Image (cartoon, rainbow, N blue to C red):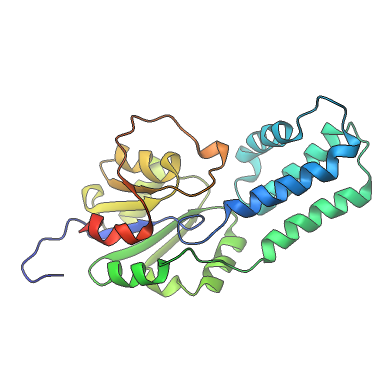
Length: 232
């Protein structure tokens, strides 16, 4: 930081999936394969994608987010959408798709490591991500990025209560905090609601559950390369 220059923020928060590394594209690829697997066993007029999304929404309060919850939803939806006609071999294939997602390598988005080094020179960095605890920590360890963060939280939901708790944990006032992420619903609106700041970086795919109406005044960045300039 330039001598004598006042920092805008003390703490910068980063989302993980689809902000630091690719994630949602794998869900889309698996969903396409899933629809193909079920096609021979569902009646004409059954929209397997819609049925799967409805199952996922119903499961969120029970199983949360992430690949394991997604796989459970795929299995249940396969049985219900096919009215029990789906064979055990296809259920095995579906479980295999989920296991492949859980063990796939982490694919960092471009310039992530360089930006974390840059922003971390004059800010404390925290990681706040939703999903399965074991899988998220595994991805973080494989990413090689954990050392950039002074605080890491894998949470069930990103809401105002959660952000207030995290900011209390890192001793930061909301006005001195900026969150960076790909979801307006999870990474932007609840932060703004408690008096913080946020930057939205759009990813190629967004899970429908994360879509939300807003007034279009959200600060956006074309890529993570814009973050150092925006937070300073």
